[in-house]
Length: 241
Image (cartoon, rainbow, N blue to C red; front, side, top):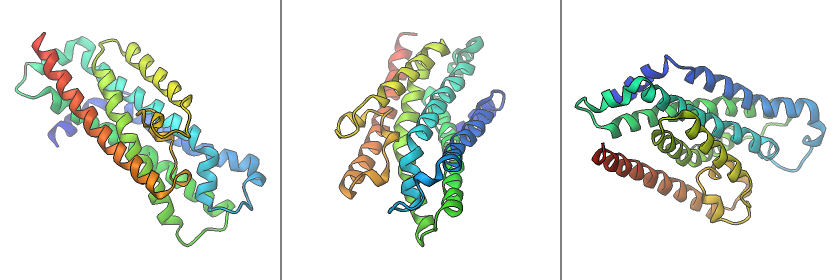
C-alpha cells in the first residue's frame, strides 16, 4: 500500500491522470459518435444492445486503451530514469520490485478508470438507442470484467518493457509496434491471440463459455508469469550494477 501511495504521488507531477481521463472520454465517445451517425445500421438487429455496440466499436476502443497503457507505463518509468532518480531509489532500504508493483497498482487504477468511463458510455447508448434488456447491468459488468482480466497482461508487460530502457522513446516504440502486430494476428486461432497485446481485443460475445474460461485462465497465467519475469530481470540486473 505504501508503494502505491508513493507512486501515485509521483504521477501527480506528470500528465498521467489527465491522459487517462482524456483517453477514456475519447474511447467512450466512439460508440456515441458511431450511433449518432449510423444508428440505422444497428437498431433492429436481433442481438442484445451491449453485443451490438461492442461488436461495432470495441476494436477501436481497445486499441486506444492499449496505447494509453503503453504511454502511461513509459511516463511512469521516464520519471524514474530522469536525473537518475531510480539509482538513488536503489540505495534506499526498499526493494525495486516493490516500486514495480506500486506502479502496476497505479496503472491498474488508471485502466479501471478507462473501463468505467467506457462502460457508462455503452450503458447510456443502450438506453438511448435500444430497448434496454432486463439483464443490461449484468451484461455490461460481465463484459467489462472480462476486458479488465485480459488487460492485466498488457499492463504488466508494458511496465516490464518500460523498465528495461532509460530512453522512453525506445519503450514507447516497442509498445506501439506490439500493438500493431496484435492487430494483424488472426482472431480465429486461439494460440496466436494469447499474445498479451492481442488479448484485450477479444470480446465475451464472440466466444463460447469454454473459450471464455480458457481466455480467463490464460490472462491470469500470463499476468503471473510476466510479474515473475520482472522480478527475475531486476535480480539479474542488480548483479551487473
